[in-house]
Length: 446
Ligand code: URA
Image (cartoon, rainbow, N blue to C red):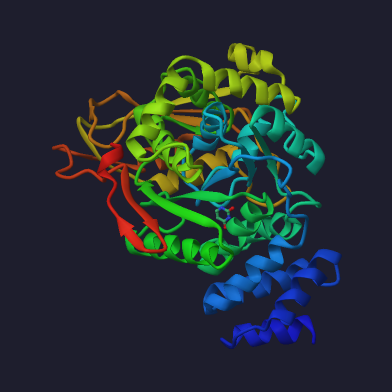
């Protein structure tokens, strides 16, 4: 069997066998298969898809490309959450310490920015010194002692996703259901968790913009997880505009501080509490979602989640002085306001384009090798439904690389649709809850 034959088979829409997938992934990891061949296979999968059985096989082989963490010595549920990616989505930074403060173990393996969406690892690494590449024994020790630890895929843990994830970003092969299932579930299962909450985003800033496609992704994710007996639910939430006000790395980390201290934007707080309540429910710590929210809310308001976050930063070698005194952080070299050119109401925001422009500003990578400018980001001053007056700022841009020019400013402004009236309907922030039995609305946690 050769790489070329396997690529050709998938290119022609045929089903790959377990030994073909296994050969391809392992030969890629040992360097016998080159990036260009893996890129070709990813593109073939993107166009031809994979059967359910192929997706399960891919997920298992990716998970087993490294170690699966064993928690048999540690009683108590280990539960994690993963998002399919959004713009301004800083929820993991808040959720891990919050749920750990409620007494549930959260061993979290996250990813970097992908396409127009940001990544938890890049955000965490914007904290000077923060180490997301811990060896497994240290990862286990910190989860045991503190309740949560946040790391990335390494050579020891899910190396297949580490390599393929970066390649997908650079080869426009992110929007593929089998590849997303393989990527998310392989690294989550490598954590050795008992249950998983997925946050599937819906709207123009999501991986899949269309609600039907997002629900299809959620269904595939929970069914694939069920094939491994991993209890999984998916919460579908709105991504038709950035979550919160901050988009970027350090700016999002700072917004997460606000929420961890009991303040911050309502939408970020609400999504975090809903996901946290689901995690508590899967851990057997609450009977219904509303009581889960009631358990978690005080932990944000009384500083317990914030203290837990400080503990995590310190344990992962982050410099907590920047966390306690964010004004110490290097200031961005450039700031520019993008102002409204007409009076009216914001009726739509192109969140995908905001994410893409933020990446171009320096907050993400155009190529695998690009270095991230942690100071780069945007503050969104006006959200859907808000009234604006001509000359009022819509967005503040900041960066330390090339200063944003007039053309860039125009591109940011054109992400906003300003109408004469407020929009007739607004997307619901928390839309549906989905498990293997189907979808239902979740009005009880609003
Ligand atoms: N998050 C992941 O970890 N992988 C994907 O493919 C998409 C979102």
